[in-house]
Length: 299
Image (tube, rainbow, N blue to C red):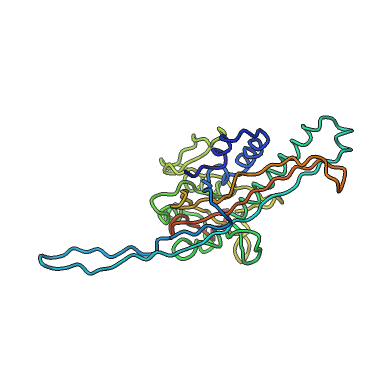
């Protein structure tokens, strides 16, 4: 059974690890919602449905035309995401409690790592950076991309985006600025509700029962899904995603987020904590996610 990182952390007896994982989830809607499938080794092979076999009505004494479906084999690799947190002995000697100081810096590193994964989930491009996995922007093609053609957002566009996902998406992902555009379009709609909440009790709006969740900045403070796309860098996208291990969109991992206290190191007078996560992602179904791109801001 695949669990989100937040759910899996409840099974850990390591207090430091649990604290880091909660920081991951609290700062990233992706870590809060994305199920992670545990895999053996450094890669995962799976079958993706291509086309279904034929089916037909037949008359009496007639036979069926034999046909089979098409299964496409795909493979996903794992990537190493991590970093070291160094706290100088001088800071400990002059500013107080070692554990408190290290906890603050470890929390900051965990936040940065969660934002790095979140950015790769959308923008990752293995062809330009072989150390990261491909994100949704690279993976989605054909009918899974709806082009607004540099136009203002409309209700029809949102509905078309939702309909592009198998069944119904679990979430609509966008920037805060795009959420304002969505509110303008949906204001007054009986299907738009503002009284939901996330795993941490924070308010969440929904449209037709589908949560509208916010993706903010990366570790450098740049908007991940901001109005910075397109030829003129003034359009943005909304993503609709359906989560599910071995079915739809899932994270991949080998082990949990690893947090190690390395103590004082020999190379320099610092106390070091190392955080590492062997991770990736997979899109198992061709209609597991969709992207509405080319949306401009209204005046």
